[in-house]
Image (cartoon, rainbow, N blue to C red; front, side, top):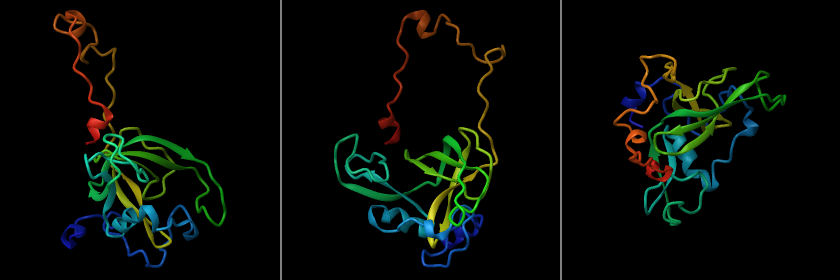
Length: 203
């Protein structure tokens, strides 16, 4: 990353220490649980070591792929290219994990595990950048930072201070009504506009 860019970021979100740096003490797990930085996910961890979120795409059609996906769901191609993506997304799903494993898991209270939907079209499972015992709301914006576990940079969610907007209250007359109007598809018999497929959205 550009040093001038790093200077403007909070320390936890700037480029992490090199993978061979001593373990600074992750808030959640012991260094013994550090992932292997090689193998099929080597581009992910190499990018994380440089402060970038690097994820796989289909080289033929550009579709966002799962981390260890071998063939594209859209076109069937098997050529995969990894490239940096924007480190931004929203909470798609979340759960609180109750796990006590002295010597390996450092916390004794529940901790959140998030399914984050990224602006790139990918979905990643991660915990939070810092300890928290509460589950963030679905739809809450997050920025992806990096925890250091045993010298390996691992993606983690830094929660935004802004909460997602509330759903419309159907009892509030000021909210748009779902009732049919003369111009609505149900009143005129015309079909609503097609909803883009998940494949189209992620390209």
